[in-house]
Length: 592
Image (tube, rainbow, N blue to C red; front, side):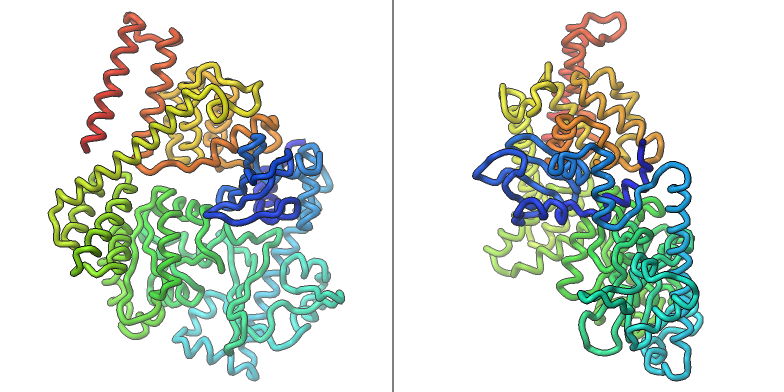
């Protein structure tokens, strides 16, 4: 039976591919990925790669690849439905079945929602008991009003191993339900005890208003300072944002992305109702996509310390992938928004937002901070690093503007910086095109799929088709209107056409285009090919321009083989006209 997409997304989210693969393969981190010896063929040098960001694996040796479900299918010798059940059992999820089982699963989720709501009410009522002056004073001492505390449902978990457990079982909830909701833990000896103890509590609420999890902060210096709910059937950290239930109704054109619960609450109290935060982890791609559904702009307001600035750099990359306009707030004389608002007030903070820097300006300043721009050698090093950063900007206009800024910072002419940027762009383009030519000309290896049954008849066209798919998976906004410019019939490779048509269908249905809906749908060799395509990074530059170039290459190949012609025009003339246009576009691109 086909499995529900929401269920498969949840299953994949709870079975992190690095965790699963680590049970079979000894992995070692190298850069952004993990590497080890492939479990599917004999090898002495590791060629097996796992990408935690893309949640895929790929072996450069045998060509195996896919997502976590495909890995389990191969490692355990299971069919797709059995692999689903295997991973569901691993994380304690119930597999949705037809009829009564489906209804039972729905009832189970409803019970967990009700349990979390009752737990939130328990924590709230406990906070305001007369004997709990200390947690009350914690919030009041942070400048929060009673109205704000009520709005966010703030509470307190008493210093007890069973207070919540007793209160919820008295209401008829079972211990298994409390475990499923992440409200209690089980010791090695099997004893059940409250997860949150002697902590102020921050309920986490989804966009529909359901309490789905909690964050708890200690009142002293004990560790961990913050404790969050684990992943549960109703809570996934990477798919939720703190205070999104409130921020979704904002009239502001931007979200303020803060670092912690208190910053967000303080911002809302001060009138900034578009503040949100990730949940105890760095911002994820899924969270960035969620933000992009609501606004087109983001102002990053992270702490001023080194960790906060490093997190801001990572967040910029995530947000830019979703085509969001990103600015970064500099908070002078304070470590975070909460502290600044207390000292200077809401109007002063609003002024900071209005003067916030574009992320490119922020990155330039971060680079400049590492050099003494009064020293000639440091200035040269600054300009070289700045040129590499500027070359990664998609828009030529933005590159020009920030090249001028870098020139002023270093005390050189704008043209000098632009020359260096153009050199860096040229080097990148040459490397990219050389790599593509090597792939196309190579009779074996990377030029062809590992599965010989999927061999490309037209390598040049197929490589362009691969690049189209890689771009569409990395930026779903590129899919709109593409079918007119690139009909599926133009694909030379049947398997790439099959994947492309599935991408179009998923987008039409409003679903996310990622690896999950292809697992169990593609044959093993086809999935290996898709993982090899997605394993490669999308090069920097104008993605729409790159997409247009790949489509032109495919079109020219179809003209060359006679599949398409300009009405009333000789095929050779059609080919020549398109080729000349492409050459002129590239010449203009190289000059700019």
